[in-house]
Length: 247
Ligand code: PGA
Image: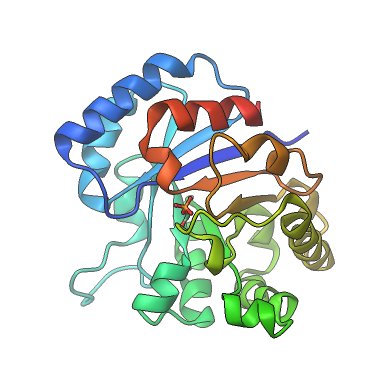
């Protein structure tokens, strides 16, 4: 059986001092986790994370990666650069990047491709806005977003992680109900199965106000293979509770 994955997304939060304190508390309480655990830190702190995580069961992740391999792309960070800091995961296509940085499905697919080429697992985010849900377009939107990544990556698709993050649930305290989430996860699973014979090993995470109180019921759904955790990943006790729920 595939191990669940709990990935923290710190977003644009933290400082050298705050990261050190958070990681100390987290590592002290972690023990031998029964699932895979990662934290996705702002890029400038990946070197610090690499030091802090040495010898631990925790894996490092980035929050974004360039769609290009190298060259004249000022401000961008390539997948091979992330590899230099033992980065194992890179979030791609987070709704905040799609929304505030105009990332298209094609850009997200290219980013996933760059990550895979460097041996980094892309955590491909898909999800509908509140308007799209109200217009009954949830399936159409998430399938379109995932299809772009499938088409660009062919058989390598079995190496990705997918995160279903309904935009209306991110940072709002409004979680999708376990049934709502499972319904979309099942749609994504079916789409992955049609694309790859190894789709069963692809983990589909839920993200959007997952917290210490609701994690267990969400993670109990048959197609929810983990979580992408924003706010609650900044509080060690909460994040540890979610990790325990996934074990
Ligand atoms: P949240 O964020 O847990 O704070 O809702 C999740 C995410 O955006 O990945």
